[in-house]
Length: 206
Image (cartoon, rainbow, N blue to C red; front, top):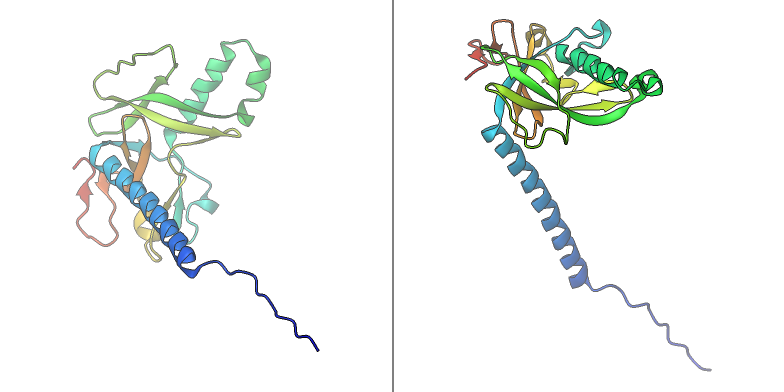
């Protein structure tokens, strides 16, 4: 009676699997560290700017651990986009304004309190090289299906801190030379950064 020998399929080398896992981990760490470095550089080199908050639907103002945000300047930007489209005499574009999705830049001018005010849409590439006046800077926006977004439309906080942020009147941003805004704090009507853990608020311009 003949006996048969069972052959197992070759298994991947455990060393090779370990090497692949290590390489994958290193790639993840590099990506994470690059993201952290970019964030730190943004904070260290970007200009400070305040944007006035606009009223939002009271039902969505506070949702657990975050505050829904909108900005007064958003309405001005939308009006400028609509006016720009109207100047082209393209009725189809005007009619579909609130279905548009596009990215763009606007020129903002800061007042003595550091609050940013809308100046104009940036008409690229006609404005190359771009020359900005004193206290002017770029601000990037995203238009998605008629909804204009600047940085983020929500500010997250720890549970139980909602009452402190109800007094928010401005969002404090760090805006880099590309116009990319990063929301860092909320600020009250006295231009003080709201810190629910500190009874002595700090001025937003420091």
